[in-house]
Length: 378
Image 1: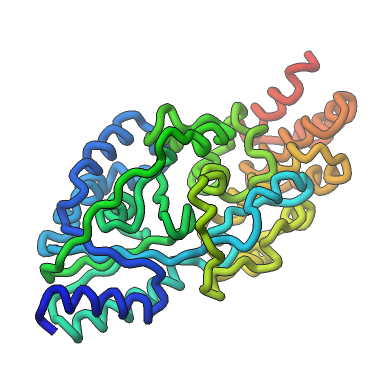
Image 2: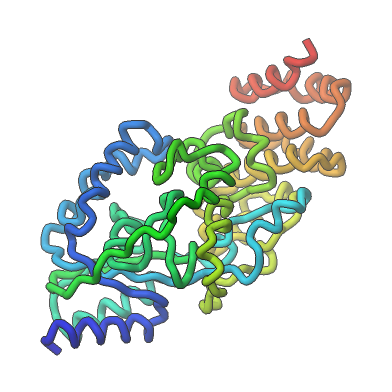
């Protein structure tokens, strides 16, 4: 199979056979603007704790810096569209809202298996060398996906597809083959600002720019320290990620539910009770989130988020679970529990708790949480 057009058609068919919903091809240098946008993002410090983005900037901004031999990039997408309204859980304040993408098996593992199979097929059919990536290397998938006509980067910087809306996992095959490229998809956002206006933390300083330091997905997943006070109320009951800007996109009217069983939401991760999540120790955390993306964040950061959500619940029935967290081994969790209790109990009761628990606290960050919680009382 040597004719470029025939090979391209065969790749598209093989991609569908291996479980991919969309496929496109682009040149290795087809997204030159990505490097400059990345440089601005990093110079603004908008990457926050994601130091790895700065460390890999040279390779991330230019595919040939990652692999000099690459000539073409095959971009692939897997639909993970939800079957219901992903924002409905936000109204159930005693429940936890988990981002759609994390409610099933870890997409890295699910897609990597398919990707390797497709890559082996390609080498067997057409030769050449390949490298495969699923959101784990210095690859800017979204601008490359736009260059390969899988969609366009919307004003929220995420990929939008006319066929699948906001709900595509992306993967890529770098190859030494010279394949016919697809035309870029044009931007279809128009004057719409829905994704910008719904953001609870105003994480978009302007259209097409994201400040990750203000993004709830970043704060609940990547951020390693205490959640900044200015964002805690905005988190609501979101304990892992945020789907707001994705879910409100008008192009989702064309979206459809995903067809990959392993990526479907598990019942245990669809609006779980905050009280149950607050009881998770390391072993039960690992058991509940086995084979999910959430497991990589770790128990302490996750329970930190749960404590913040409890503080936002307004539910006094959750006080006992939260008070128990004041004895947690993790200062990160203890500090979040202090704040949560300050939102749920009376000033007199908080003072008693401080006398019982706060005097024994030796972590300076948690001590500061107690001081801030009691500040209105002094």
